[in-house]
Image (cartoon, rainbow, N blue to C red; front, side):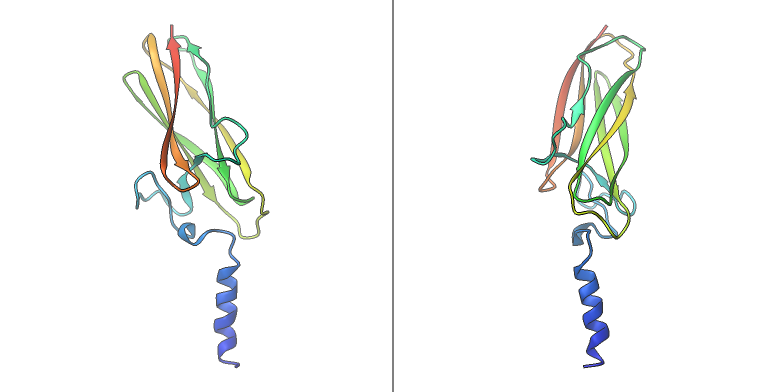
Length: 151
């Protein structure tokens, strides 16, 4: 029995971790296997638990003038933190990808919303689209689009 105690203790410790096994020391990207760094992952933007809109942006903007956009993801427990937004502009489309990270070991077991803001500037007038890419609760890739008129 004494020889089994360390093994049983190790298994019990691993089973009590607050982070799902698929995310311990790994990443979840838009494409399976995308390496983003330890414990950094694409944020969940579609969830029944998300009360705030995942993407809040104005309906209009002026050329060259910054507009503030808010992106909100959902964290599975109190160890989740917002970890920035990648911005890619191509023509009249601006694509945002929000990242979250997990840190800590002793975490509250409550879902938390993780808002963050980003400032966007548009160089040309006309209709534009802001696309927020993320994942849903099943880790499927999802997109949320918002139209904006640039004057």
